[in-house]
Length: 240
Image 1 (cartoon, rainbow, N blue to C red):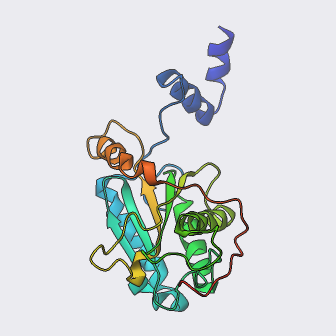
Image 2 (image 1 turned 60 degrees about the vertical axis):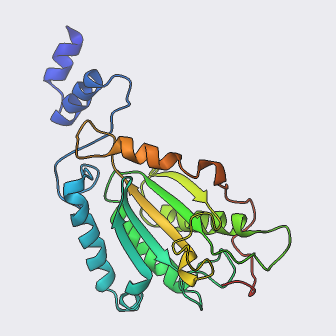
């Protein structure tokens, strides 16, 4: 009786929260909603509105002159996991210092912008680091595995400081040269990249391909590398 009386006198927010508990007492359901992109934690990424998020990100990039010139180095594609955003390196290095997990000014500016935009959605984020097939030319104890993982982790760290909400990052992975963007040219600069995946929320909605995403996520699991414990200041000019 006390609980009933308390609920009747509580705010609608509390009533919704309690109602949500009884619908999902284990807390496994994700927070979903129907609002538009940029309206915070109620946004629900599906096949229908993923194009809207992609368009908003592209618009934000175009609005900043320093980033507009980097458009050719940014790819956004819809996959079974969600929206994949790829930051592609060039011969001279676009987002990171040559052969290093240290972000340059362009990389920092781009990731800060993306963090502010993606922090407005509840979806989990995964980050992946990739290299080309050229062996790392720095210290012998440091390889493309460490470099790819450390670049992904450097991106995670800055994005977490710049707008992503707590616990939004689900995974940080380094794949070295095991997932080449251009297998026909393993040494091509664009194989060196950081991927940011905005994952679909778990839902019963048939438009959200969670099963496919999980299945795709299994591939390459044996080749994942964790970010090294070393500082993000590794310097080497042997490999861009």
